[in-house]
Length: 244
Image (cartoon, rainbow, N blue to C red; front, side, top):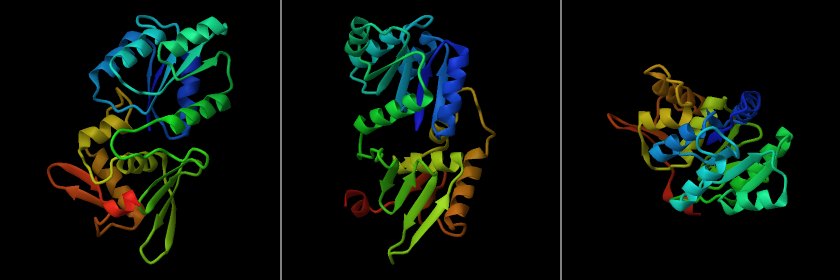
């Protein structure tokens, strides 16, 4: 999952990003509200969640929320602020924030509130909402466990394969699972799995696909992750499995 974080306190922003990265989020961290607004306005990055500080240089977190909602964008937003008066909480929620956390806060509470937002989030297209109580994402024969970074694959004969994934393997397979049977090109994968400004080497996507296929035991077969030559890649999941 990709998350946009807008926090101008560098120590706090760095701490949040470190915790979220450990939880397998891809985090774009902005120190300035205007830069965050430009990224959101561009629309080329698919964010799952937003964390906005209330007071920011340039565009405030409140203004970012208002801009999102004025365009009918449903990105779930958690507002960070030192303001703890009821009137101010109401302003934040009425501006479009989905939840509110007052500084200082514990990182465990932050993660819990993000999980709660995920529970309520609606994704466009096929509904693929993680089961947050157990923190799992299931599509067809594949189940990702967010707590253990394990993949469980169920074969037609009833056999189960349980694999431990690296963070990048987990992020890559999660992205495919959120877009089953869709062709995804190299630029889309880079845009979703690497932070803004962290340009990877040219062959990194192909290398990550090879590593994931090897982990799945599919070095000589592309039955699950198919290469569409000259276009991109596709995760093949029978429609009957997705709709069952």
